[in-house]
Length: 330
Image 1: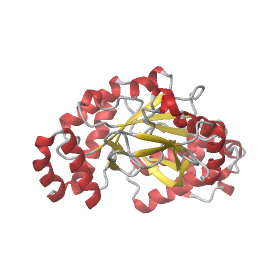
Image 2 (image 1 turned 180 degrees about the horizontal axis):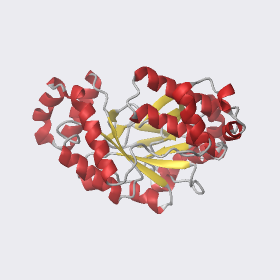
Image 3 (image 1 turned 90 degrees about the vertical axis):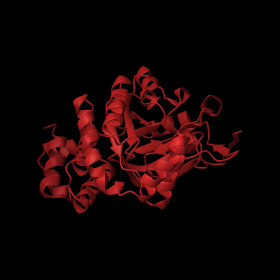
Image 4 (image 1 turned 120 degrees about the vertical axis):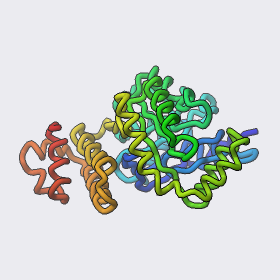
């Protein structure tokens, strides 16, 4: 049995992270971090999360004010809210957190929200992220249809798991499910391959298909699959492209964010993720995204005046790509 208690303060995790190729500046956790209500894959930590035996889950505030105050601890830029909980209709914590972030002018990603957690008037400022659920491929992204019906842009994410989701047939089935659910994008994620991550992968598979546990144990713990995932990422991206799906989730534009700034940040994120820029180059691109998020001014106006290169601390290709996006150029 799951027991819910009222938390004394919002659970907030400040700090920059890359989520499916997009920068987030922090995370709001409406139901804390004590454990999930079901087996799920966390796309930020890139690990499986499991329910705890008889867990106590601390629900955050149902009013927006505490969440807005908590956002002052989070650096400038997009925030991730979620996941939600089946108890959202009672507690309302996820919706309150989402609405607070929208009111604060933040671009918002919602992770696996329940229908009751979908905020009103969120179009443009919110992108719904639906993380893969183990089981039948056709039901892999259960939140897509709900988000689409609410008029929100939604994206599908899934981990590449050898012998499970990383094979050609599985990838095609997941791409079909994403397309059928109305996703704007399908993004494959490389799971964390350390010892803890591998144990979690095996435990997740055993919870769904116990008969495959022994065979899967050997493949995950003793196989060289991390070295082969680059090819599987390419295969998944090709399957998404064939169905007209973008490779990264769309980036939302916060109500307090100039549209040009959002477009420039999105373009640099895409270059970091999709152009095989290398670790150093990717770090520079993400630093440029952080600078844009923190700028606090309409950079398109600066670019139109011809002064963007004078204030932007990243020269060369990065500066040219950002300037083109600010000016609306392809």
